[in-house]
Length: 434
Image (cartoon, rainbow, N blue to C red):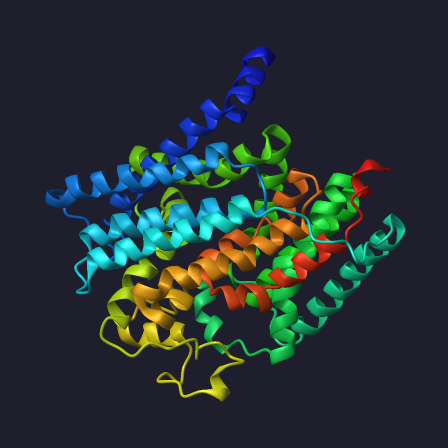
């Protein structure tokens, strides 16, 4: 029996209101912490000690005041990525209380909290549009979308000659280490899968070109047997989820529910079934609550421990800078962490890499502020575009930014290209539908 339409509309109106947003962000903070208690039973790198619970609760309650910024702020690209960053930093502050790794925990927690605040200032407040120097006509822009499809098909065809294996998600790690794409092709794969096709999907979906939108989803799914990543496998379903959420809810509520909803489902599933990670409910909890969120927060714990006793990089890990300066690490930081902790390749966000690894906890807030200014360019480039379109077209980037450095997100995953596409888009595009 379905709910009466009046109840559904009232619920939607409440979730879009300030009271509804406030309730959601505070509940989300609680779910994030409760989820980490469950994660600690499965994840060796994350600890939980009931005797320290009262400290963690005080820290979480105090820091959750930051989430109220998302109640009053207007939606923009920075709002979307900022809420995901808030979730990650809250998770780290919780983990930091229980961590058995030896490093200055109070300094690390304070640095992370200040870093987030300094990043949120520009990404939530800077929204002034860039001066339009180049704006495409509607017809020219639709030709650009067709060109994006053609480029995507070509990249998939070339990449498939290097690797194309239909294997289950459980077996992808048996083949991932032997993947070897040429450098230019690696960049093209990142640009197409993370930026160009999600952007094209959002355009076609909102313009009403259903078959072209479906074609984009098929092309995205074809990246799974090529790259053998969970990211590629779940991207089509994720984009559809964002499309539905943004249809039902205002953009701010949709951004919050996009992370709060999956985490809450994972927590309820693991509570109600008491499943192992090998079961279907357990795999959902592993993918969403552990790998999508807890691992990103836990990376900060590990990076703080490692760089408390090892030389800082001073940004030498960035590929364009490495040949120009002395670097104490020959291998990428993810490989260094794998060799040290044996948790697999541990990529990490800008807070861990451009922050802790590069300049240490004292100066990390300054790099977070600089990163916020860079990401705020996305707000300015997308000013004047429908919030729903901004949410959908940038749909995969919050997950990218949780797991890779800002430099990698901007260049390898094409975030800078997305900013450019937003900038040249005709603002009247969605006023004319087929």
